[in-house]
Image 1 (cartoon, rainbow, N blue to C red):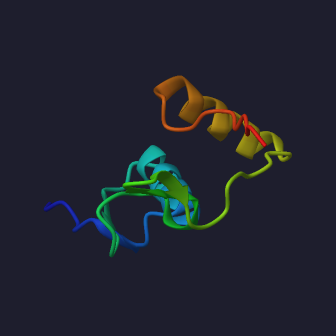
Image 2: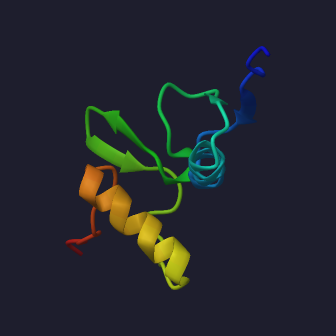
Length: 87
């Protein structure tokens, strides 16, 4: 029996990353594709001479228990951190 090809996910934003994590946890091989160099989609930041720029959503709120658990895992891995704006 041969292994099936990976499932392709287009977009490495929060939805694509969540789908990839769920599929991988279920035992599927996953390949992510994104037009940008990094992940994050509308949550990503860009660097410029002026510093780091948030071009999309600056933050998100986690209310659903499952999403809270996922965000806690992301925090433990250093992928996200609590937003502390200085206005």
